[in-house]
Length: 335
Ligand code: NAD
Ligand code: TDX
Image (cartoon, rainbow, N blue to C red; front, side):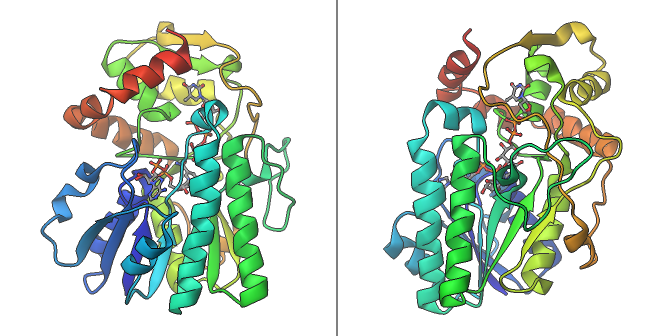
């Protein structure tokens, strides 16, 4: 299969490309990415001379560029997005441009070029938070809380409209929070791991009682790949580790501190930095499990592997944490 991956220089996209190139020797991948602050070609350096891999710098809002990159592909996996909730609270318009308009452009290219399959990579955040013990599931109404999740819900609406109106060959995946190698250190786990490695405190928001269902990135990649090859066109699949027991942000922070051999004094409680903060996400993943998927890595094991990766790749995250990142950090954390 020849696959166009949008946003392949980001966290999940680069892990997905690695997953495909390592597991399917006959497949090839075109990585189409604008290289925003979150895109980093270093993430895929080991494939730069691989004939099965090519990179095109471009914006998903540019129809001609997307259509040009899509020539001859069998499928499009659309990851490209502005992905950080905190940034969406401070500056929303780029989220609407890329996540909403950009998704329509990709859908239009898929339809007009007659590409056989497209996956829209969405998020469990479209459901909004959900009270214990309920889990959100496919078919539930969307109740997004942030400009980010609202833009992803809008993108899904456009996909659903294209499926109904044009029988567009689209499938949707909605995963819970991913973690693992190459995650940009603005998201909680890489931020906290790298802060501790720099001997800095970790800013835990709003008491740390919030619940996220942590999914190791490679397990999300295997799920997206399964949907790509065996999913039903027009369907949406919720992807979740369904960690049991559920883990609060404070608990996952303590797990990281324990792995790094550091005390609770590294935690700095901060309040009010995420207005509209969702309390709990939980989704029912039985539909993707019925296709034969299950996560392969436990949270304890995945966190150990992730900490080891950041310890072994100091050059990567130190480069990422320089420049614009410093400005972002000062503004977000008011330091
Ligand atoms: P990321 O921010 O690490 O990467 C996003 C990539 O998209 C970057 O390489 C960036 O350069 C590229 N990009 C941004 N705007 C673009 C544009 N206009 N044109 C082309 N490329 C552009 O994000 P991520 O965490 O890897 O998330 C990937 C996808 O998965 C997103 O759609 C996100 O909504 C979804 N998702 C993420 C998570 C998570 O936990 N990270 C969970 C569920 C869903
Ligand atoms: O410094 C922090 N301190 C903190 O306590 C940060 C950055 C976050 N948090 C909390 C807020 C959330 O409750 O940690 C939790 C996770 O926050 P993020 O890592 O920013 O992720 P989240 O907002 O849950 O969204 C992520 O998962 C779903 C991705 O950014 C989205 O792209 C994805 O859709």
